[in-house]
Image: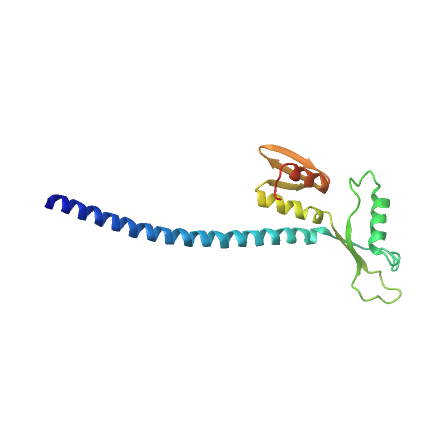
Length: 179
């Protein structure tokens, strides 16, 4: 009988040890889950910042020198868009020219006889893909932007290429991705 009591006490001690270890592990798992939540939030924030930086990159700016002052009139964006079409021809431009902003730099007018100020043009070709880029990042889908503004998507070992944002959105919607 004492042998049985001794075995029961040993088992009881082992159970207590296991309960203690289980409590410690549960606490550590809770801490890790909280850390993962914080990391996921930071990751999402950083992904959004990367997209913003890509869209606001100086690579999207063009500085044009030599246009006489006032040639652009009251609509510098429209003037620059038309100039691109005239200068490069529609066959060279695979999509409509997307100019977000255009203005003279520096903003202070130059005295007569001085060289004309440059025109700074902010191109908008990447911004329209921002929303679908976010959806694909959340879904873990690999993509890249190809010149001139084409999105290449690798999904389930297949490659898809899109020139228009609506097509990318439809493709995502048809697969129920990122909704």
